[in-house]
Length: 135
Image (cartoon, rainbow, N blue to C red; front, side, top):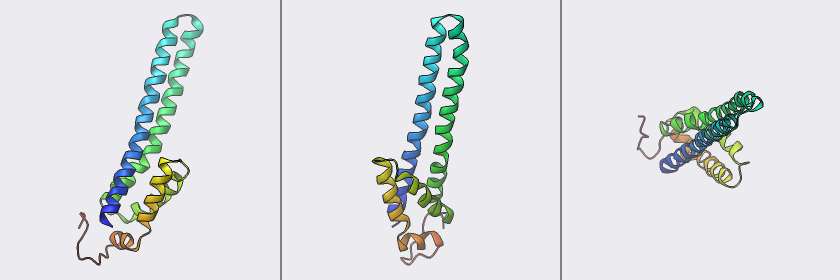
C-alpha cells in the first residue's frame, strides 16, 4: 500500500498545482484585460481598471488558498503523518463532486486511505516489517 499512498499523494499535488495554475491564469487574464481597458482611454475606463485588478486578485487568491490544503495534505501523506490520512479522506469527499477528474482522484484516494494496510502504515503498525520513509 505504500506505493498507493505515494501515488495518491502525488495525484493530490498535481490536483493542487492545477488550482495554482488556475490562479496564475486568472491573474494573467484579469491583468491583461485591465491593461487593455486602461489603454482604451477615457475616464470611465481609467476608473474601471482598479476594480478589474481587485476582482482578478481576489479570485486568484481564492484559487490559491483553496489549493494549499491539498499541498499540505500531500506533504503529510508523503511523510506518513496520521492527520494527513484523515484530511485526505475529507478533501477526497469534496473532490468527488468535481467530475470527472476530481471524482476519479477522490474515489481512488478514499479507497487507498480506508485500506487496513494504509491505516496500519499511518498508525505506525507495519506488519510487513518494512517501515515508511519517516522512520
